[in-house]
Length: 128
DNA sequence: CTAGTGACCCAAC
DNA sequence: GGTTGGGCCACTA
Image (cartoon, rainbow, N blue to C red; front, side, top):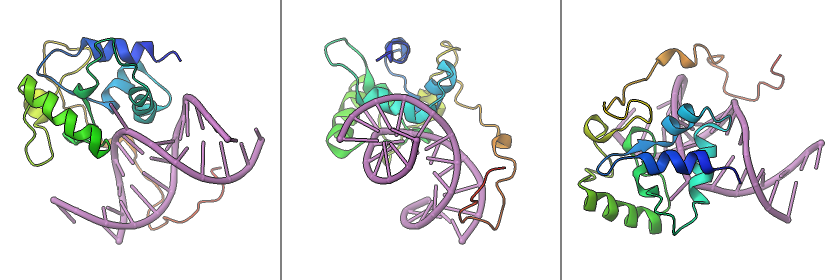
């Protein structure tokens, strides 16, 4: 299924570095966002040397089911990426698909969701 | 077409 | 700083 660009990018992740689903999604400009990347990773074909373990959740959190999470930790630790308190130090290990050389994990513009109709968390019904 | 699920993310509580 | 809930969209039944 055309997840090739995702796999390709994942394969570009250098050893000892990690990136998040969101970063991959933004770099690839996937409409599905992080979700699509997650889906792609879930369907990652084995036997192609795709370092799926270098893809983690936002904030350096492992958001995958236990069986895989355990393996992921071991693989990452094997590459020199220890997980401290179920979390990875993005400051050091975060890798950006574009900047390759720099470890810029900081691209958080808080202005993404300006207003989301506060005090209203129940069924907006219509969007227009 | 609708409904349900998911290796996600973010804001509010 | 942990839990809840909504949103976003791809994929399957």
